[in-house]
Image 1 (tube, rainbow, N blue to C red):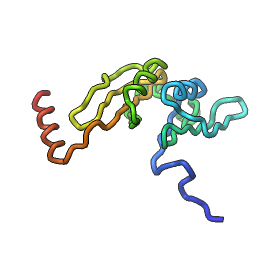
Image 2: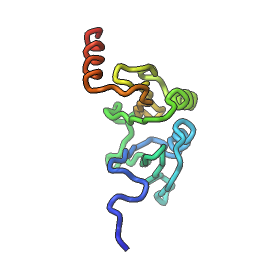
Image 3: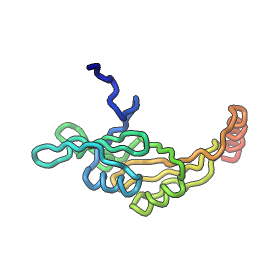
Image 4: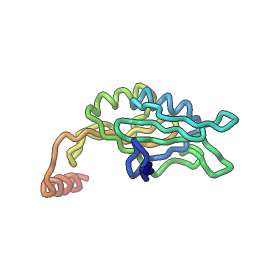
Length: 154
């Protein structure tokens, strides 16, 4: 039997989050983003060592904080420089679901010059998320013109 070098259900890049309160994060991501739990592994003391969640066609992995190993969530390290970007068929519906579940608006959901309806949120654990649906396909020339118009206004 051959071994698949990339496990079933995974893509080449998979985000892996450290969360202060991984069980609560799993519940939130289920309510807010429609996450489905694929697998959960725990330490003998009950701390979550590894969880695999599916959101749409992608996997998200996470674990509790393990300070002795330098595994700290965004709130303990003063924020995050990473944004998890989620494309969805109906960004307005997912936005409403996520904000109702406790995500905070960082950048309002609006139609953007690059052709997406897009906004940014922060979850209660300090992780940044952007949600989007493509609303128009732009040629490279249209994109450059739209970007030039946008930057001229800024």
